[in-house]
Length: 210
Image 1 (tube, rainbow, N blue to C red):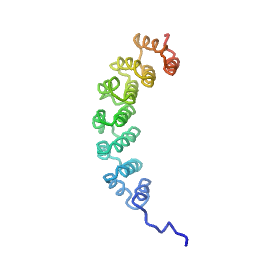
Image 2: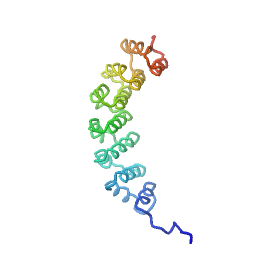
Image 3: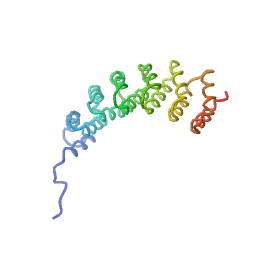
């Protein structure tokens, strides 16, 4: 006998996924309720759906950014980096995550700050660019400093030219937003970097001999 799946009741996971696409009765209630589910995976699915259905209020963001599970915090940062929201209302919580024990949460917090060009944590970002243990965080911090283009960051970006190759390459891109003799000298030195991709990045700027 052939089974008719259309007559089977939805599983909770299926109902949650459908709610994210505004399917089913009370989809908003399903999504908002699942934001407090015991399963981190279900909380992530609920957050994605809430954003898709314009249910991600400031309160929702703050709860997700403060979630006890690092995977949820990471996902919240990734989503909010591209979300249309009142960033000032959540910026302080994101800045707090710059000292999260999970380096990928720190990296996500930096990325979100950069995507929203938030300058209120400049000093913290400068510190991370030079001193975070994880090179991924240092690289992203340098990228954020380049986006902000604040002169107070120029020394930190130049110093990043002594870091690992990915950080050095990111520093070259960041320096494109700055001008001055110190920048030209730094680019000139970088044009002879032992890493060919760093040298290529300098060549693309076309400023090493300016």
